[in-house]
Structures are given as C-alpha cells and as structure tokens.
Length: 178
Image 1: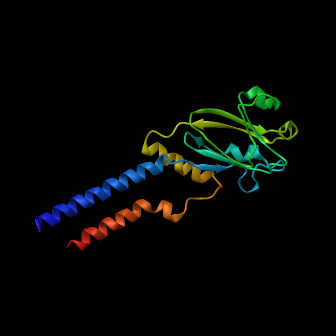
Image 2: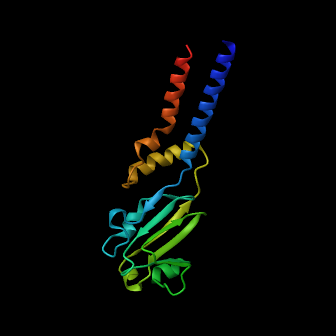
Image 3: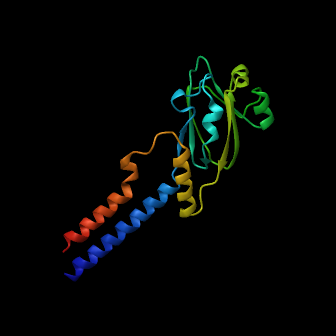
C-alpha cells in the first residue's frame, strides 16, 4: 500500500511539473499576425491602421497574403527609405504571395509594397518588435491588454484548456487511488 501511495505521489508531482512547464511555455508562445486580417495585403485596405494597435514581440510571426500578379513586399532598412517609398535597395523582397517573417530580435522593421505607387498610396507599415515578457505578471498584463485591442482570431479551446485538462487528470488520478 505504501508503494502505491508513493508511486501515486510521484505521478501527481510529475503532472504538476508538466502543467507548470506547459503554462510557462504558453506565456512565451509566439503570436501569428496576418497582415490586414481578412483583407490581406491589399492596396484598398488601411494597413497602417491594422498595425497601430498591435503588440509585436520577439518570436512572433507576421504573414502576408497578396496577389503575386499585382503586389510584392519590400522590407526596408531605414525610416528614410520607408517614408520616401524607396524600394531600390531593400533588405529583402517577398514575392511568393504567402510569406511569413519571424521576428528574431527586438527593433523596428519597415515593410512597404514593392510597387512605389502603392507604397505612396499608403500600402506600408512599420513594426516595433519588443522583447518577450520577463515575468508572469508582465505577461498576464500584456495578455489582458492584447485581448482588449486585438481583433484577430482567438486560440481554440483545446489550446487554452491544456493545463486545466492536466489538473482534471491529476484530480481523477488522486480520487482513483482511494
């Protein structure tokens, strides 16, 4: 009986550790931002307004969806190039129609249409990439702020419920031993 209790205790301890680890990873999880939401990278959409209320962090990804026949994306080096829509010397051109960019470091990134005429009509935006939160409290404050601002899709219930399902399993395991 003592051996069963000890193995049950070890299993419960393992479940608690796993749920804490999973919860920690969720805090630092990357966010996928679809530029322009449902409209995508479109000359008729207000891309600047789309990006203005969003928080971008190291580890996040942005996705561009656009017509290859009509558009391309230029990532520029400087605010001066961005302001003047100078796409003659970009960091990188994106031309696949569905491109993702991972933010691996903090700093400002400048994106414009590869067509200067579309850029001059406002098809451009800049992103300030912030570091990942250092504490749980900071992360929770950010999550609540993001929830108030963001209009994009929310995570599925299965993603959100993972740690709670571990707790339910833990409780069932505890009661099954008695």
